[in-house]
Length: 120
Image (cartoon, rainbow, N blue to C red):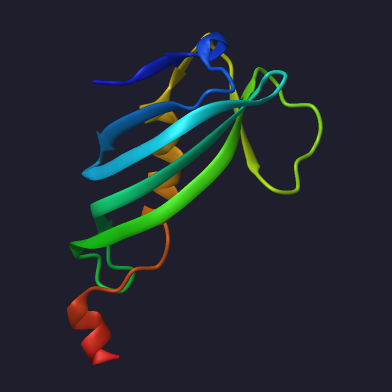
């Protein structure tokens, strides 16, 4: 089930969240950053199923990453050198959908299974 947060209800006081997505536990907080921008900081931990780029076998890797990015209410006009920006085009922030892309990024990297690593 998806966790949704109303964009306009997030204030300068950190709003904590926790969810599990694709086997990865995600804990973090949302805070108002600038008008129409929220700062999301989170920790992603746990096993994630990936495919070996050499043989195609499926195996688990352990994820342990901190992520930070901005959520924009609608189209983001401008540039931010410090954070990536995710545009939210609805009144509710679907945190599971936001983390779909983060998990897909990790899964799309080159991962080698144990057997392929040993073969060199």
